[in-house]
Image (cartoon, rainbow, N blue to C red; front, top):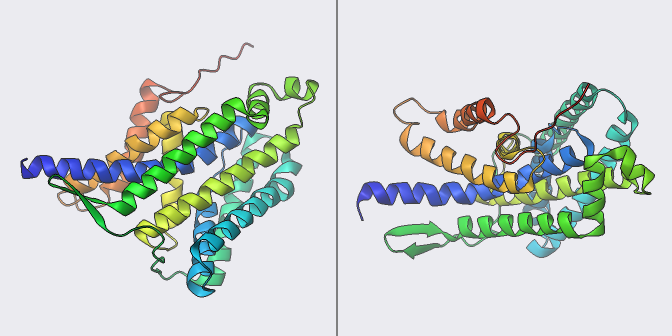
Length: 298
């Protein structure tokens, strides 16, 4: 195998692995948008807080990884419920721009909490995934990447099945289609809203743990979390399958851009590439690759 082909395959594998984590984080955007029509711009900071809470439990307090993980999930559930009850529920019926501005303020608040407790310095995340590499022919594949991709895709598939076949999932789909009709059928819309925020907080924390284990813990994790926004929009803001596909596409774009364009163009291309691709996709498919067109009759 030629060195050029080996490099391409290596970049593709890394991109698919990172893209799987992006897909998991984008799932939070999708579920909140489907259930509440809210675009949560604090998703990156929710990821950041989840990563730092798990870091503090493992590295600073010294808890075993499984115990720290369960406590982090419990914290995420409380965080999601608190955000929905305190910040979002009073805004039901208000203009969408008001809710979006609240999520921006929430992002600033969560980031400030992290900085106030842990500071801004970069921290090495404890080893929670295998660091060894597996040799597949001429390719050296990090087991950390493979585990991250497998965990992320398994969770995306699990939530997709739950959204389609469970009572809560069916209720969320009903609320996403028509809130008034769902209310008339006896569905507790407020419970659905809270559930969507809880799931978003959980997937954000898990995504934060996976990204931190690969890249370390730092404030820039919030930026990585926000990269899931173009993932969700590229796939379609109302499509779980679109989130998975968009995650892989954006992850591959990032690694290919970093491998071939960052050096000749002076760096930073990998951070811009997903948004350039987003613009191009929206020019052709305004609702994303898998999004449903909404036709409103006036």
